[in-house]
Length: 322
Image (cartoon, rainbow, N blue to C red; front, side, top):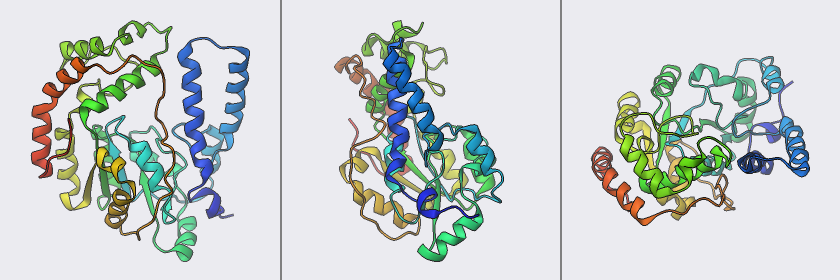
C-alpha cells in the first residue's frame, strides 16, 4: 500500500519533535546524573521516538526493517552540506517546508556510503503519486559532511547529475559553536571535561596541536580548527560536480534574509518560490557554557585569514566575516 504523502513525505509540524528530543536527551546526559524525573522523561521520549515522521539521525531498527519491504527507493536529487555547526540543520528544516520538497525519514543517516541512504527515502511509486498532484518533487541529503571525501565520491557515483548546496559559516563564529557542542556532548563527569573549562584554553590547545589530530574532543569528525578550513573541500566538490551545479550560501546571509536565501535555492533546484513560515531556531544548544573570549576570537581570526582568502578566491567573492 502506498504511504499517505501528507504524513510521510511532506512537511509536518511534528517534524521538529526530533530536535526537541535530542536537545532534552543531551541536556540530561550532560548533567552526568539521572533523577527519577529524568528516567521517566527518557523513557517517555524513547517511546515517542518510535513513531516520529522525521528523525534527526538514528531511526529505530524496526522502522528501517519495514521500509525494506516497500519497493525500490529513490536517491536524493541534491546534497545540502557544510561543516558541522554551520547552520545546516536550520536550513534543512526551512527547505523541507516547501510543498515540493520530500522529507527524508532521517536528516542525518550517519552512513558514509550513499548507496545506504535509499532506505530513508520514499519509493519511486510514492514519488510518482506525489508528482501527479504537485508537479516535480525534490529530495535532499542534509548531513554536514563537507569534508568527507567518501560522501563526495559516493554521491557523485550515485548521482553524477546531482546538485549541491554548500553552506559556509564564518569559521571564527563556527568554532565557538563547535566548542559549545563539545562541551554539551562531553558532560561534566567525562574524562574530557577538564579540557572544556575555558574557551580561551580550548582554542590555544587546538592551535598548539595543529595540524596533528590529537585534540581531545568528544565530537566525531574533524578537530575544531580543521573543520573551519573550507577551501580544499570546496575545491573538490567543484571539481566533481562542476561550478554550475553548486550553489553557495553564507550562513550569515541566510539568517539575515531567510525567505530570499531559500528562494534562491528553490530556483537553483528548479522549484517555484515559496514563502517560509518563520519560527524559533532549532538545534541551538542553549547550554550554559564558558563564554566566548575576545582573545580567542582574535587568535582564530589570524589563524583563518589565509584560509579564508583562499576560499574567497575560489568563490570569486568575499563573505562578510569578522
